[in-house]
Length: 397
Length: 235
Image (cartoon, helix red, strand yellow):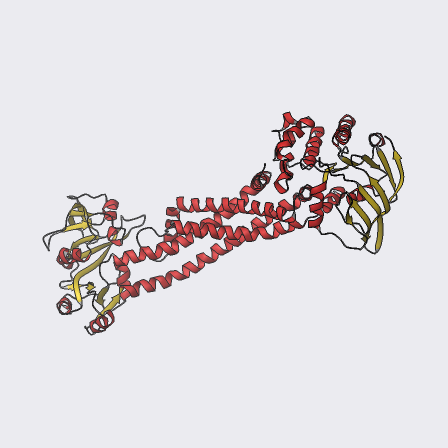
């Protein structure tokens, strides 16, 4: 016996191009939807990872724009303020502070970076305190520099890939015309450390003529500490600014929420257009087959049978489109990632679009619900067709 | 076929339509009785009301007034009550099979799938096993896996007949079944209907313009101006 599903499926084959275009419309909207939901999930996860992987929960920097410095920590930037390294001594006495590490951020313009040049970020660090705070850093080749005044660097994974450098190679710092020997290359971390070049703190202070000055102090707070009261105490230090990384994260998420609303609006519009497309396709098909549907009723089909038949056609279109859309989204997640990165002011490292099983199921359920809703009207109209009307429309035709 | 004795008894069937302010009487006062296994044909000029009458007899439409009994069971009464589309469908699928001038086969379904299509919606016990026999009876078994576009018009009408018979109706309503066929194929189709009536006890009501074909029936009703003007027994 032929089933309701087979009849519905074969009906859709009658106008293959029309069915295909409708499926493509649904697939595109499913793709947008799953990518957007994946972005919502992925961006926050990537940002959390980026910030958590910094290894410290507070940063102290010279008074100025704290977010500029925070952004530099994450992405690179200019216009930095400097503070005295001696502040470290006061911080070390603070009982709620577990670890501290000084950082001198510096940036030089590298004309060979990208198509029209770009900023190369150099971090002056003390290997011992820095690596204690960032325990996830491991080496692909070599290790940290030993001599605090050596002209040696450790390159992040991507920086080394970009420069095509191995341990033992030399690199030239643009603008300053200083050569460094590469002594270590880090494994990929999925954070901004991948694009950074690390040099001994004292060496960079000498090169940039900033003796005893630093831009940032990373602080790891004890788990038992009261962060709020600690921040209040740290504000008593002269000419410094305290940046809580949670605060940075919240600010970035607020900025991103605008982009999310925009993309969500586009997704909703795309879904509405797809819905109208489905209704149009099915309704046109119902009108074209009016006589045939009437005949189905003469051979025993109840209104509910016709409703089910037309509804099944809608569901086949929507399910096929939804599944294809999810497959597109999974295959093209990397492309979506690149597109989103190109429009965002700041994008954390790692994948921005995170598509998991739960998300796929939610999207398919949403598309299916939309399909069910879209199919109600055409199916209802088809169910109401009377056989006699069909026969008369034949006479009038 | 169902062995229950089914006869059709129509008393004073009337159907009027409104077209704007005008009232058109398509059928008025039509009374006739058809016994089980009868093959009756209905002829008449265009607009004489023959199709409207057959639609009423085949429960495709409610009459404006009049009564209809099927196998002694009253279907339409004179109380003005109109049967719902759902109720009409229930009656139709239990009792009637239909064929039309256009075959209305689904082009993407094979011959056998088209024949079995009614079983998707309604199935009398044991009918599914008899489909092959039905195709053999109508001489289209060798075409069962073909699509409608791959067979001739005569074969398509045979498929439509098979589809109408798959649920073992007691009455077959054939509205201009040869309207789209050449004379040779028309004779073949009417012969099939005649044989079905004679051999299986199927009651056949056929509407046609063709007097020669109509004369194959046991009885002939002639319609004129919405009424039955003459009844001729041919058997």
